[in-house]
Length: 164
Image 1: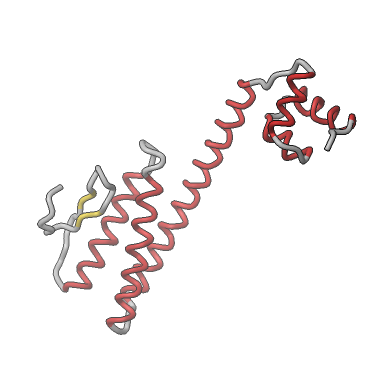
Image 2: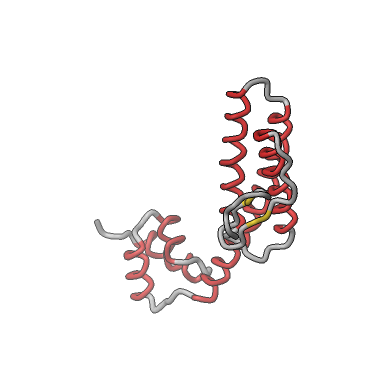
């Protein structure tokens, strides 16, 4: 199917406005290859600096969303810790502890995406405290000062025989 002059002009206008190839393709409803062909015939090229800026902005947005999600996950962990203390039976305790474990691992994995981020050590300390509390309740033995495996981000309860 031939491209109409109107669509061809729309593609050229979007490229001249600084839009990237894929953005133009989505906007006009054609393939990226079609956009490249139209650009080449019109003597236009895509400004890589614009693409780089857009990519950096998307990465910054994603980092901000992860930070917000991390705070929400820590709040969820605090709520789960309270539920754990109110567990009425072994099954209730087990399910809550498993949920906390999954949430802790998910948070730990997410934290690894943004190394050196401010406040993460504090969050890790909170997670260590929560895990220590779980072990205290589960085993009836005090677990003081849990540690964090820096390589994996995993919380290791105090008294564990596992090498750090």
